[in-house]
Image 1 (tube, rainbow, N blue to C red):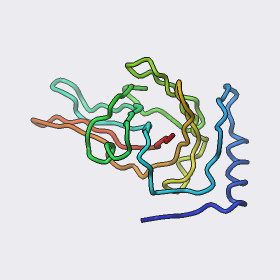
Image 2: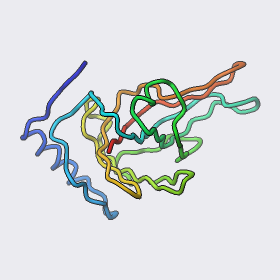
Image 3: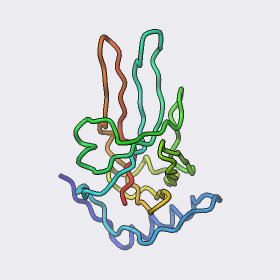
Image 4: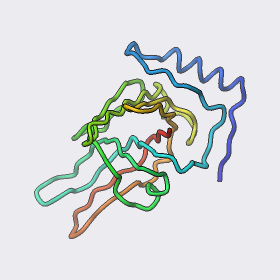
Length: 169
């Protein structure tokens, strides 16, 4: 299990890189910034910024998409279960999460906004990558390791999503 830490100097360098790549869109400020990376995730809720692909049904060719997947607890995201809620962000192509403000509105009307730093895909796994927020709270987002979140399949058809970034409250 990895447990890298970021030194104060590295944190300042990363902060400068993120500040230099900040978007002109208004951003909801985070209450606190993380001082260390973590592979130990708490039991708090998660929003995953995911890439999905597969053959979803007869007559459909290979499909790619991106979505935001909400899990009420991190433990649920590790079982292969479908998310508690999901919103498709793009179909036919993958979303470029980095350097863009991306918003998605879940079926309950709650909107999640992600702000992943440009170049964040070049970070080591589990490093701070940006921020997000919904109608209630702020989230801190980290680069994930591309692990499978959920999938389904039967009769030669299947579809699934992998985590690109995870955002925790």
